Structures are given as structure tokens and as C-alpha cells.
Length: 338
Image (cartoon, rainbow, N blue to C red; front, side, top):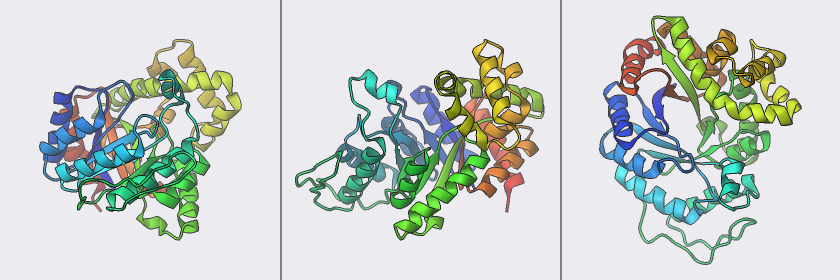
């Protein structure tokens, strides 16, 4: 399993420092997030690439509503040059409410992502594209420069149909944060079936997952920090729980040590304003984060590796990013050797 850091919603200086720290401590990658109306991930990725020499620079994910696939290809080709082929860009359908805030229709999300990948592939391969799809139609477009570096296409996907489509078209699947290992195992089968239907080798598709990360010799303190980050990410699910309890019960059905009813009770406690450290159980924190002592963190990473994750991107919780890079490299990576 490859292991790296992930940074989100921090300033450019901190982001570049994180990239340097990741490389200095032997990590495999630095991943960046593009959330709408926060800092643009592609300029940050460029800065990180210029500050490093070896590590992968990943962006997950851009979206086809605000970035036309031809512009996606232009940006990717340029970033591939800057990084010497170390870049990985992901495409996803974004958050429906964000897209609608801009007055755009969040239409055909799976189709939009699929066609964006197919169009960008044509253009980055040096082809002239007159792609005619349901979402996008081109008329003889080609890039004005040649791309000689690798440009692997990743897709952020959650639902069964979208994960199957990812298996058909993508080089990698980006798993959303707060997805338990049980979900990854189930969804890997969807990914495999999509790949095989398209005549592709499923073993060649990478699986990258994001995790809240906190590590300390004090396990309780590390888990408390992770719980606070979990609560931030889980906040959006509370409204979904109110509207569609059956959907939340289905999503929580992949948890292996926490029942759906126990998970819904956590949502209720958080909704009532109870402190996340009290509201979220240790069992749930163990399922949704990499947290605890170095030994506990290594065991959690191994569990996800066994489920099919090929790369873990860890978001430091309650830790300075550079400290997290040191702890991950010094205390956890040796426990993962072999």
C-alpha cells in the first residue's frame, strides 16, 4: 500500500510545506482537494510539484460543471509537463447544492464524468476530437501542444452504477472519506465487474482512499482529535438522515463493528449538540479513521489494504501537518513494511 498526506483548505505556504515534508519523510504522495470557492487545487499542485522531485501530486476531484473537459485536458497536459509525469487528476460530479448555487443544473452526473474522461483522453493522446455525447459535443478540437508525460485519469465515485462506470473507463478510483472497509470490499466487486465488462484488467485500477488521521502514544487523545474531524465531515449526512432515514441505514450497513441503529444514534447525538468526543464511539472512530497509537494506525491501514485500497491519503487531525509527516514516516511506515 502506498501512503501519503492529504491537505485541504489550508493556505498555499502551508500546502507547499506539506509537500516538502511528505517527500522528506519518505511518503509516496501529497493529495489536494478542490472544494468550490476555496483555493484552486491545480495552482497549488503546480507549486507543490516545483517544490518536490519524487512524490506523486494528486488532485481529487475536479468537476465537469465548472471545468469543461477540453479545459480539464489543457490543465492536465500543462501540469503533466510541470511535474514530469507525477500528477494525477481526478474527476467527480461535485456536490449538487454547490453546483446549483451557481445557477447550473446538476444534470447527468455519471454521464458528465464519463464523457469528460473520454474527451480528455482523446485530446491528451494528441487526437483531434469531434466527440458527440449526451452531455458534450465537440467540433474538431485538438490541443495545441503535445503531451509526452503520463496522465492517468481517476474518478471519485460512491454509488454502484458510478463505481461500475469507473471500472470501465478510469485508471483509478477515489473513495470518499468516511467509507468503511466493508464498503470498499463490496464496491471493489462493482469496480471489477465494470472493468471486466469493458475488457480491462481490474488489477490495474488503483484505489485511493482519504482518511482522517491522528497518531499519538496517547490513543485516547489521538482518537478524540479524529472524532472532531469525523464530526465535521459527517455534518452533511445529518440533513440526509432527516430526509431519508432509509438511505442512511443502507449506507451504514457496511460498518462491521457498529450497527446501523448505533450509527444513527451517533448522528442524533451530534445533531443534539453533544461534543463529538462523547457522541462518536471509539468503535466508529476505528472504522472511519486512521487514529490511535502507531500500532493501531498500522493495523487500521492493513485492514484497508486487505479490503483493496492501494493508496491511503491521510488528513492530519489535531496535528501540525509537518509533525504528522514525521510520525507517519518514523513510527508507522516501518510497521507496514512488507
